[in-house]
Amino acid sequence: QVQLVESGGESVQAGGSLRLSCAASGFIFSNYKLGWFRQAPGKERECVAASLIGGNTYYADSVKGRFTISRDNAKNTVYLQMTSLKPEDTADYYCAAGRSYGGRRYSTRSSDFDYWGQGTQVTVSS
Image (cartoon, rainbow, N blue to C red; front, side, top):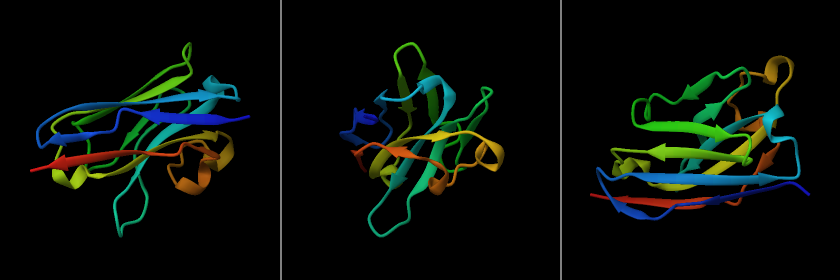
């Protein structure tokens, strides 16, 4: 069955760095777009970074220049390197995988991702 398992979330001081990992199984990893989403208390889930088919990447404006998404298709793993963390980055972070076809190909809407991990918590203190 499909599994996405995140790890790497923890509490850090502002200005610090973290690397989140997401190990996937149960589907053809290289054929899927991958995304990292986050949800803070009382806020909607948002896509912060995505690795899209064709090597394209997406970053939310709030994380551009600070976060980097990468994927290792040989290890079926996607990473989110986070630097210069801010208290507003505090959230539960989720990885997701989506089939890429038609209008979904470059979409970063959560509804266009099919499989989700259970989430990992990141807390950034000032």
